[in-house]
Length: 315
Image (cartoon, rainbow, N blue to C red):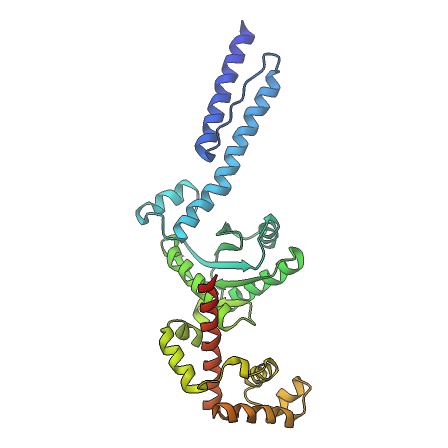
C-alpha cells in the first residue's frame, strides 16, 4: 500500500515536471512509469527534467527577451518587469557588440567568448541568426572607448585562433539601460553595413567612427549616379584595373606620399607616377592634389556602394 502511495506521488511529480517543461519549451513529452521502475530512477528522471527546464529558462528565455528587445518587438512598459523576472539588471551601462561571420556560427564561438570573460560581470550572448551574434557587455567606471575598441580586436583575434572563425564586429555607443537597447541594435546594424560597404579592409566598426561612409550611405541613388557621371563620364570601373586601384588606395593610406607608397608596393616611383598620370588623363583628377584625391576617393566609395546595392537587389 505504501509503495502504491509513493508511486502515485512520484507520478504526480513527474506530471508537474513535464507540464513545466511544456510551458518553458513548448515541447510535450509523454512518459509512462513502468511498475518495475525503482524510486531512485523515477526521482532521477524528475530531477533531469527540472534541470532541463531550468537550463532552458536560463539560456533561452533571456536570449528570447533580449532579442525581442533589440529588434523592437518587446513592449517598453514590460522591460523592467521582465528583466527583473529574468534577473537581468535593467539599469546598467553597457555596450552592444554585433559579431558577423561569413560562415555559420556554432557553439564553439559562444564557448570561446565565455572563456574570454571568466571573471567579467554578467555578459549576454544572443544569437541573432546563423551568421550573427550579439553581445551585451557591461562596463565599469574608468572604461574608455579605446578599451572597448581593443576588446573588439581581442575577440576577433581569439575567435580566429581558438574557434577558427573570422568575424567582423560593430559596436554601439554606451547605453545607460535596457530601454536604449533597440537604439543600440540599430546603431550596430548600421555600423556593420556601412563598415562592410566602405571600409571592408577593416574588422571593427564603431558606430561613432563611421566617417564619410555614414553620409554616403544616406545619399539617394540618383544623386550618386549623377556624381559618378560628373567625375568619370562614360568611364566605368572596368577601365581602371585592379592593380592601379590598389596602388591608388595605398597612395591614399600614405597621405599622398609617392616615395613611401612606391617603397611599400616594391614599385619604381616613376611607375607609380605614370599610373597616377593615366588616371588624370581619364578623369581630369590629379591625385597628387588633396582636393582631387578626396574627390576620387569619394567617387570610388560611391561606386562600390552602388554595385553592392545592385548585387543585393539581384539576389
